[in-house]
Amino acid sequence: MGPSELLLFANWSTLLVCMVLKFPQILALVSSGSARGISLKSLLLELAGFVAFLRYQKYYDYPIETYLEYPILVAQDVVLLLLIFYYNTSVKEALPYLAVFVAGWYILALQKWIIDLAMTCCTFISAFSKFAQLQCLWKTKDSGQVSALTWGMASYTCGTRIFTTLMTTNDTMVLFRFITMMLLNIWVTITILHYRRPAKKTD
Image: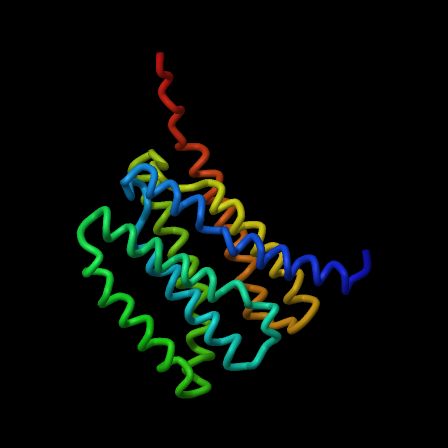
């Protein structure tokens, strides 16, 4: 398999995985009727990082196949956000957060320095989102309804995006982001599995 075929496989496998990336987490929430173990702060920070990264890619007109999964990820995170508010308080309380994200989408592209600064910050924002989830797991010592499969698939997509970035734009900021995210996603996955409580046996 040549480089072009590997690039095509990496792009399409990333897209396919991301199309269902949050489904295990969404299904876990719906089936249990609980958001136990899921950090709201982590999800909000992740969503902010996704929005900033997607806007950066569009602003510089990068090949759409290198970031096509991000609109899908944003949509799935919005569904998760609504579910968390639904199970914890009320869906209406999620509306101000969504309004901020929509406004941010337009503000980011007003000036080149704004989008460049946002890209620099979004890696740290996304990293903080992983640490927020880790902190929640360390505090409760219970992974609750957090899906190890979702975090494991996220690790895979970061790995493929490291390859596609090297093969296309070779943007150092984007590479740094994906390498950092992959390592943190793996760390969260391992922590989830470590704190996973065995299912109770039924007679």
